[in-house]
Image (cartoon, rainbow, N blue to C red; front, side, top):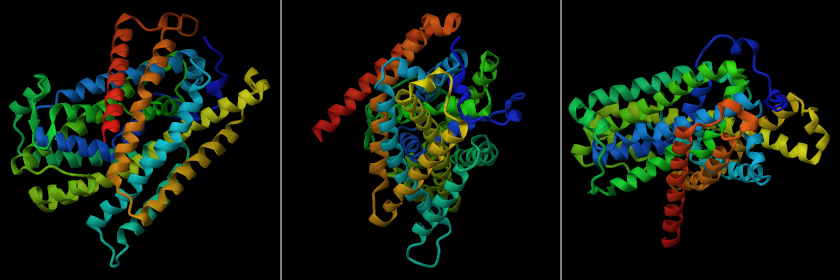
Length: 434
């Protein structure tokens, strides 16, 4: 097993957080994934295809579970961070991920900062013209303050928010008068029809896979896990249970969104054009309840994703910074790891940069939907490289011994890599034809 100096160099989690079992890393990861793009795409699928494409959710999330579980297993068994492992597959890998993180998180936070203010303004407008901007600035400041806290403390803060989000979409689904037989058929009888409304089934499936894949965000799960204090082989069992809870939460919320849209927007032939239009179309079908539920839901995914997504990316990027620093000072690689306090300084500096630098979007009239699409496309382009590197790492006899991949895991991960190659090529061709 590898030397554990790399993981030990991370900021130490509180000793109490490592005792017993409690959900945490998966909760933060789930919130970082439930962004406005996921909200819009699942509602759009339900509004244009009803329950027909529900089956794609468990398929996508099964692949995500595989990817995240293998990443976490590598960290727990090898004793080194995920990016340290990726560095073994190519010295260029940390640079690629670091530059991509800088761009993707900036674009992602641009849209979230704009939308979280707009969502609150729909419910609590202030008595002046720049009401949405003021709300965005207030919640950006609140989010930055939360990012300055210890990572594991965010679990207690956001656990009620995830529960409230789940309850809200459950109410919306119940108000849509769902048909149980249609839901079961959509979940267990796979089908892809032609053009339904403005979007084809294949286009919606491709968009959903691209959003749910979230290659860069996937990197953060093992770092949340380390900050929880989970290390070594003894943590494998609770890590899998935690990840199952996380993926199950994402599935439940996304499925309820599709069900709510299928029962309300599909009969009215209303398809949302963007995240802000989402609140409008549900207001027209569910009245004040729809307005409250989906304005609250939009704010929740934007604010929680702003905090947890930025924190997760800052953890990954600060580890890359440390890895690159050891290259410049080779003596550090012999166990004289960078102090945890220095690593924390880098993390907080990156989080502050990503929280503050996008604020210009509030004053320039940037269109959030185009930024969401740009960020999703960028992450999808990295999936093949990260997937192939993970496949190589998980077959290392030297580092993993008996815990290396078996035939089934290799086959499933290879299928995911091939799917990501196809989607990346498809996206590239679409960009060339525009």
